[in-house]
Length: 308
Image (cartoon, rainbow, N blue to C red; front, side):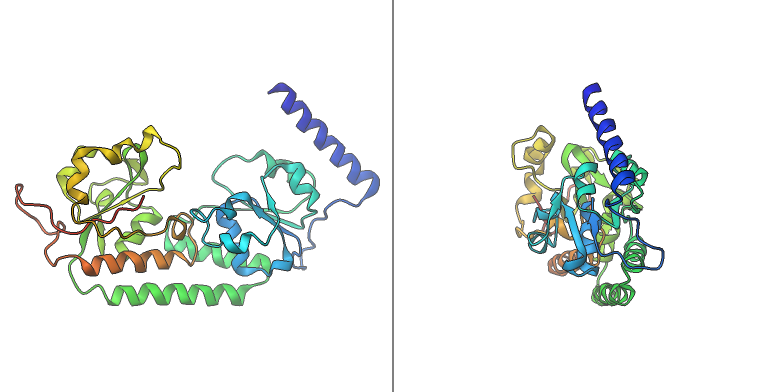
């Protein structure tokens, strides 16, 4: 660990010395010029950049952008250079703008800023309002305000259409992830399921953010729909809960319908498609649902959604 820190410090010193001696390193973008060598270090900023900037202006996106389970633009990312987020690697792309996530401390960002490179950090979008804010901000940074507004107009049009088609009382949906966690109020996932015409179980229970939901509580509430998280490729104890026999009743009438994780793992205009997919499942449910009070001994109604 000490050796790694020493190596990083030595590399930083060499970079700074190179800039001072030769002056041919990456330059901070002028205040009134548009960036032409953009590097993205975050899955969510990857997708915003690809939506708003021409390929010729993108120097690199993160390696996560290549994963189709995570990135809705994975095919587009295949035509771009990728980065694993190391400062020395990013430096060699000579970026005039680096965009990154702000949800954790990032030594790479600190090093790049010390090298005089412009870095803009984006918070995760935890709501539709957050999506709009991030799209507009990225549009301003890239000089693509008109394109940003077009994307948001399509986003809002889809949400408005889905809302007009609700028609019936909401059913009850449960978001259920590895290690028995769920999404409660003040989360993007909760807003997605509620916009699709469901009540979100986590919110109904008074939970906020990502919180633990005991399996017993999930079973007792008998939701009409269970949306589970991304499955790991290798066996994982964190997902053993999905094999519990108590969940069998939720699978009896499953339609095997899934909402792709890449539509809503990041808040982008594509998140409206997740709302559409869940709304389609909602329309297929029986009129009487678990969102309406039922006797304790009633059979669970509805058709669960299993997304693994």
